[in-house]
Image (cartoon, helix red, strand yellow):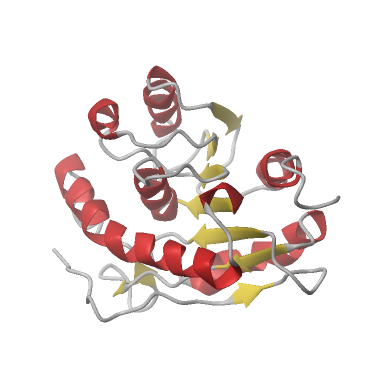
Length: 229
């Protein structure tokens, strides 16, 4: 198993704030296996007009992808055993937590002004970390992902941020069954959760899913009163 380099600092492409000036909200994208930060930062120009005082950042995962000649990974997925995925996400959690703390400090924000948006393996990482941080973030949005070892959540849950899950019913990479499994585990732990199933969608993000996520961002990042629409 790969171990994060303690001297390595995560970083990646940035966008915004659209309005210029002071940042009052932060959105962090966590990309999927074999991609890098440039993948999801492409969503920032679409979302930025709805969140004009928000900074967006999409860090590159710390490891080269071990299943492709290019791209990055948060942890290895050569073995899909739940125990292996748990060990991987546990190992990368400190690096991501450090990055989130540094980004919040950079802008003078706290966890209540942070949203995490993950895709696939990025969703797995976002859910694992956000639910175990000392303070709840404003929102976690997970596309085409899963909750790693959901049965552990009852004993390890620290925070209850609102969670939004979007998953294609025809996903050939992360089975659609991961959505109801995560939804059930989160609900059993009193974590607020909303989900959207996308008929016919494979492993990706479509317009309907993105609009569903955008509504959640407006609700949880703007309704707090820090930004105007």
